[in-house]
Image (cartoon, rainbow, N blue to C red; front, side, top):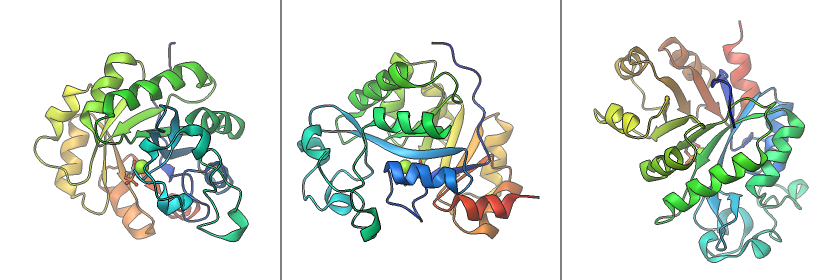
Amino acid sequence: MSLPQLELPRVVGHRGAATYAPENTLASLREARRRGAGWVEFDVKLSGDGVAILMHDDSLRRTTGLDRLAAATPWAEIQGLDAGAWMAPRFAGQRVPSFAEAIACLAEEGLGANVEIKPCRGREAETARATVEALRKHWPTRLPTPLLSSFQDAALAAALEVGPEFPRAILIDALKDDWRARAQAVGAVGVNTNGKKLVPAMAAEIKAAGYLLSVYTINDPARARALVAMGVDCVITDSPDVILAALSG
Ligand code: G3P
Ligand code: MG
């Protein structure tokens, strides 16, 4: 599979558009598009039987009410859970999508994606391999090249090994001096970091080194503008409409 060069947008919807719809559901992906986003970020982890699904927490409890680990629950069961009612009754009926289903939704909506590999402990390589496998199988060539990211360097190392064609970004909450060595070790093209903690000197260092710089999760218009002024390329936000408006013009 040959992919065109990575072109990150200025604004990416976080977990879809998490302010407005239940995170990591198809409704949330669609809501991001409706609110003007061209790309979304979401979290991919594995069900007990190894199906790549959209889920942030290790436990299914917060978003589905089932007090069990995703890693201990088969896809057949996860599939039947309600992942929307916790947010508002009108979202009842939203399901936990498989990654394959999410890609089909992105294709319908014409959305690009920052795919965050969010492995449970000990499943870093396995989760990365399943992510790459699904991308190879389902990612439509007409969509922009996706960006893979992870807080787990082991997941990115596995992604590099099995799917070097998919660009990678290291995910680091608070950047330290080792960021460059970590980025180089996994052949990353980007650094994704906590935009509330990023300071101008570090942003300048990352940009001077030639990396794409993305920040999460920024819902405050003034902070988004300040980060872009620091050289940030891409702002990941729960409220893409608000941040798009803040950065326009
Ligand atoms: O990928 C950016 C951001 O989503 C990382 O943090 O915890 O929201 O997945 P989290
Ligand atoms: Mg995430």
